[in-house]
Length: 255
Image (tube, rainbow, N blue to C red; front, top):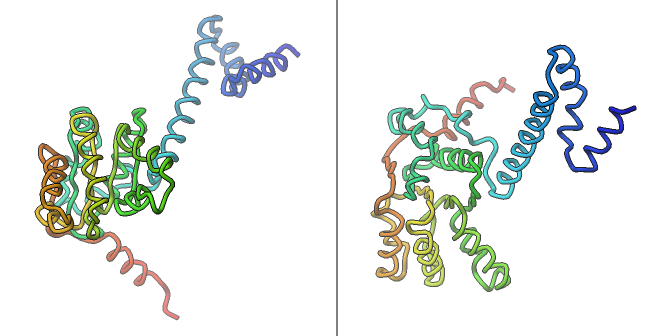
């Protein structure tokens, strides 16, 4: 009776993990002859762990980070020649984020750039950072006033500027308009020395100039994104998508 009342009261206090684990912890206390403080400490740790886990999952969902693209699921051997395992593990430490440096991942399609970017986002969210992930062209479309309400565009821009980590996937995927170029300048300038940006692109940085209609503004964007950044720029590599599709074809039974 007392236990049932206590569980009800814990739930009323919005301490669901303590309520859910009360029976288990009470049994452990009886078996291990724990004192009141040790018993209480275990329950508090259960609640804290639950809240941290829930908060982490909310950050991942809000960020748009893929749960499938993590360092745990990354194949370190597949493209080890162009993405050395030690280099990728160093990125997993998020040290470049602590240093307020950007990360540029450039190379052919399918070699794992987006996976690495999302995995970094996953680690950053695990560390409590607010992460924002967008395909670059889709973000610019949402920030355009004729496609999105002005108020929503302003809120989104503010979130991108203030995020602990901003990930721009498929940068330089297409030509950018003058307005889009100015938006990119604002983003890169506001985040300079304040927060890291992870950029993935199928083009090397020296080819980015051609996507900007204004070379002066484009040069300023390049300077803010690339100068001082950690760069992983490769010209070749095995494609996960191509080889994965080939393996699937081989494994399929003949009709």
